[in-house]
Image (cartoon, rainbow, N blue to C red):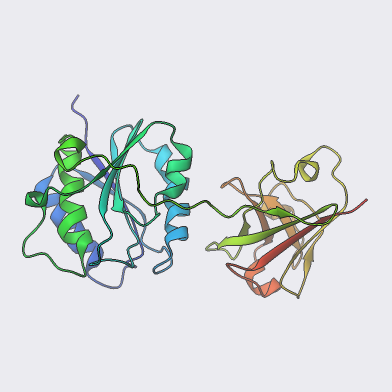
Length: 269
């Protein structure tokens, strides 16, 4: 049975304008057999870290040879490079601005190429819509089976950033940051089980998590429904990070904190 090519889209385009439709049109004109999957078009505008988090949490669940097009591109039209990342099982097409940084961290074997084969681009080429005129035709041709080596030479100086890591403070304290506020108002921190193993043991010590000034989380729950109404509590979410949440409510609103807010975890006793 022939493989059905899959192309995923992760962008900050939203759904109110024509951008996503135009990109899909270009893809289907070149690869009409392709199955296009929207991972998200709600990445925060211009937020490269949010885009990196989004694609890193989704790509590995797709079949081998899926092409992932990741467009969060505040530098569109500048000298920033368009690139192809070929990993063990997946292919990525994106601007070279760090949006694939968390994928680089997860993939041991990888090859990054600067896309220079301009004969694959749409003409005339817009300086403000490279997703349509550069990335979409490249993604479509890759999905059709064209080798990544047809698009440009390998590079080693691709842009990547280190994801923010929590820092230990005085004894029993850990200082982190809110990476993301999800659709439900949960505050996703950058703290993992490896960063605070005592908190996730069979008999965790008492603790306080402060984010903002309105409330503190002092209890760990195993699911969202375990929390009492109005209570803010800690939980390990599906992304593998410590979250601060509230049952059927928004911790974002209750705690008066959001993305970039400082997280202070204090283990007592």
